[in-house]
Length: 317
Ligand code: CP
Ligand code: NVA
Image (cartoon, rainbow, N blue to C red; front, side):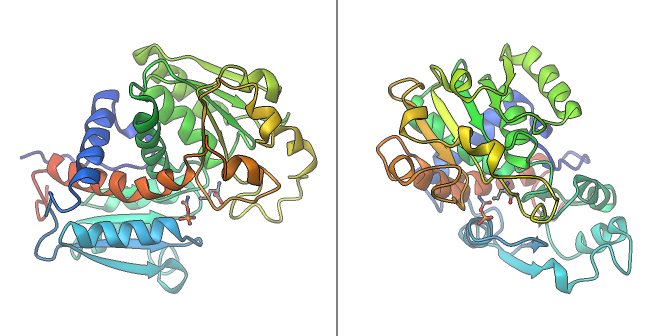
C-alpha cells in the first residue's frame, strides 16, 4: 500500500509510462464499460464546477456511476470554496467524505492549494492553465485513428497561451508526439510550461515547435487541433481575440497543408465559422465526436488508476 497521494493537476503529473497505462485502461474500458467496479459501495467522488461545462459534467457523472460510485456534483459558486476557509482546509474536509475530488476552477494555484490539504486524489477538470483530462481523451482518439502515438506530428492552432495549448504541449510530448503550437504574436504558450514540456520531451525524444505561421505549422501534420479563441474568464480581458486569430482558423484550405489523412480535433464547444469551419468539423477527417465520447472512457481509467495507485478507495495515508 502506497501512502503517497497521486494527484492529476497537470499533464506531466503522469510519467510517460503512467500515461500509457491510463490510455491502455481507457481503451479496455471503452470495450468493456463495466469491467471495473472500483467505486462500488458506493464510494463518492466530488465533482465541482466553478465554470460552465457540458462534456466534463456528463462524462464524469456517468463514468463514476459506471464504476459503481456516487458523484457529488456541485456548482462551486454555491460553496464556501476559498471564501470562508482555506482551500487546504476544504481539501482536508472533502477527503473525509469522498475518495477523489474533480474540480474545474480558475488559477492552477487553487488546485495546488486544495491538493496540499487533501488526502485523496485531486483531478483538474480544467483550470486557466491546463485541461489534462481533455488531452487524455485526445490522445486516446489519436491512438484509435493512428495506432502508435510516438512520432506523430500534432499542430495546435489558435490561442497558444490557453489551457488546451498548454496541455496538448505537455501531454503530447509525454506521449512522444512532436508538438507544434501555431499562435499569433502575443499568444505564445507561457514560458514555464514550455520549459516543463522541453524537460519532458528530452525524456521521450519528442520535439517542440513554436511558430506564428499557421501554414508552416500545419504542413505535414498528422493532427490539427484548435480551441476557442476566448476561453472562459477571458471575455473581458481587453485583447482582440478575433482579428489576429483569423489566419489560424482550421478550414479546408489550411487542412490541405496537413498530411492527407490528418485527423482534426477540437475539445468543444466549437464556435463554427470562427476557429473551425462547418466543412471541417463535419467532414471526414474530423474526430471530434469520438473525442468527446472518449472523455468518459479516459476519465474512468484515470480515476481507477489513481485509486489503485494508493491501494484502492478508502485508503488514507
Ligand atoms: N471540452 C470540455 O471540457 O467541454 P465542457 O466545457 O462542456 O465540459
Ligand atoms: N479553452 C477553453 C476550453 C473549454 C473546454 C476554455 O477554457 O474555455
